[in-house]
Image (cartoon, rainbow, N blue to C red; front, side):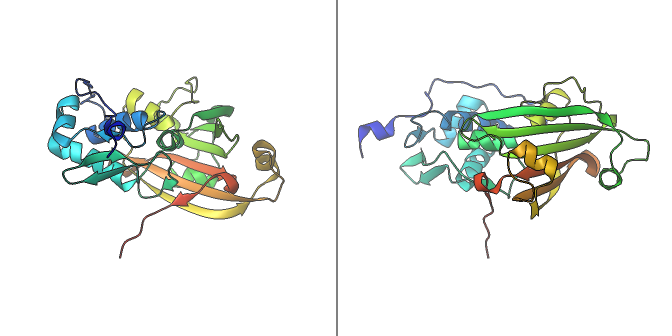
Length: 255
């Protein structure tokens, strides 16, 4: 084994302070720090700390350290060998449907820089379909957030429309160009618990085509997701329309 391959991704003396009061699980906070480091140039082939060293660096239990590594392993980003340690083997994956993530987090995993163009933000009375999914009354408003998103390499990739009940108190004046999930969890302290998601093929409407810079009637991927917070309370209904040539969904199946 070449000596340069054993260069560590983290210095043994590095220390990281996690937010124990955050609704984001500790293992996920550890994983996010590692993902940010994996996304840097030259990360592939470098060694990650042993579990006991990871425990010291982040001040977490062995179970938390192991769960963070298990998640990275499932994404195909690291490889673990007994007596040889844990090594970074990849930086880019397709979207894994086995875990609930937002667009920003998915692009970070790929090591790509997110580009966002705001289309529209405001309070309104949602249409009946969305009102029913969010369990709202006829006069209950939602915060509607429409965004075009892509990367530094391709833009736009997806048109997103998020509908959040106004009762959650999200300020329409927020900067929604970054991660919506991070804003909800870290600033507004609203934990994201689970979601139902449907993906199907569709045809772009005239407005969708104009925004996505394709032709009306072109085939698109349509994803609709209903996200819940504690108590199974609906938090967000999002409709995402993707240009299929730039996006792939994947899931690992076992029998």
